[in-house]
Amino acid sequence: MELRDDRGIAVIGGGLAGAVLAWRLTRMGHPVTVLTGGATVARDATAVSGGLVRAFETDPMAARAAALSLAELRADAGLRELAGYREFGSSYLLPPGSTEAAIRPVLDLVAELLPGCAELMDAAGLKAFRGLPPGTLAVVEPAAGCLSPARLRAGLLAAVEAVGGTVRAEAVTALAPDGELRTAAGGGERFRAVVVAAGPWTPRLLRSWGLPDQGLRAKQIQYTLGSASQLPPGLGAFVDETSGLYGRPDGPHRMLLGLPTDRWDLDPGAITPLPELSAQVAACAAERLGLADWPGPDARTATAADCWAPPDGPGGLLLRRLLPHGPLFTFTGGTGGAAKTVLANSRDAATALAEAFPAS
Ligand SMILES: Cc1cc2nc3c(=O)[nH]c(=O)nc-3n(C[C@H](O)[C@H](O)[C@H](O)COP(=O)(O)OP(=O)(O)OC[C@H]3O[C@@H](n4cnc5c(N)ncnc54)[C@H](O)[C@@H]3O)c2cc1C
Image: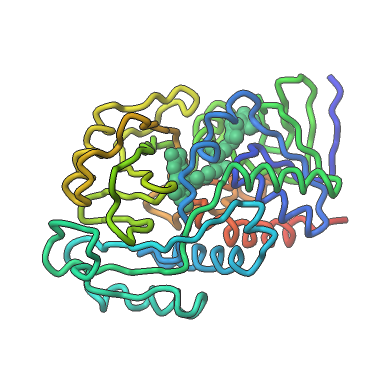
């Protein structure tokens, strides 16, 4: 069978990670081909994501990436428009036992990258929350909000095509260690470098191609959008590590709320909602926020998987080389938070690829 030899970089997966990486690479002058997953796209993390973005994370690497990403978004009106960015502030209620001394280095890092954007306070001052453990601390960020990962992905893939990049709705069916790949359409193609950015599909795909899965894992995420007759005044987005509840506004009287799942290693294309988890979220919302009538009759539960980075290495959305000295990489591992960090993570990844494979 004929083998097409392409001197560019292939990105497998056109979710948020693949789209932003491809956009960065084309802006650096690299010929890029994005192979999106065909039918799986509608069920991917990017299509379903809640899109909450803020700068503070307890992990310093994640905080750096989140703060740099939010700084880029806030400085670029075109990106904000493309992403449908809305700002409403966010509070991060730290886990019981957290101390100011323990998080001070991360707060200082965030303050350096995004001055004045994160402030530590006693969560007792956050009137929206009930029954918090005594001494709970919170990081409050006035400059945080949400974007639409699906809109941003669509806009950036269009931008890739506008400058001569290629976006093909074809699933990759095989990938060899030398960079030769095959798609459902048939023929073989070889690229200078191939980046697998297939989100939660990545570990399964790698194993099916006889490649190491790098300890990456798929985990289900679920939230419910619903209405309440009255929301606590001033309640923006929040993550409450004392209960696990997280949420963000979704219009007047509407709130997106969720709790973490413990569902690992599922087929990302066949995930179904967990009704018992939705009931737990409603109970937690009543207890923590006093929302007795949330989610109401117009409730909608959304669910998908995301790709988790291995716990014993550097976490988050990173460029990871698949085999020593080879042309294969992964760019995934968003761990439920890559909408926040993708702008900075993709800049680092594109810079590393451009150094390793200079555009001819
Ligand atoms: C329910 C939910 C809520 C979230 N909320 C937030 C949030 O509030 N804030 C935040 O920061 N992050 C959030 N995230 C995380 C963030 O949205 C994800 O980390 C990010 O969207 C992942 O993008 P991705 O491109 O890595 O994966 P995906 O979006 O899953 O994209 C992977 C792509 O690979 C494609 N693919 C699969 N197989 C193949 C193949 N064989 N060939 C070619 N392509 C293939 C698929 O079609 C898919 O389009 C959330 C995630 C979920 C699931």
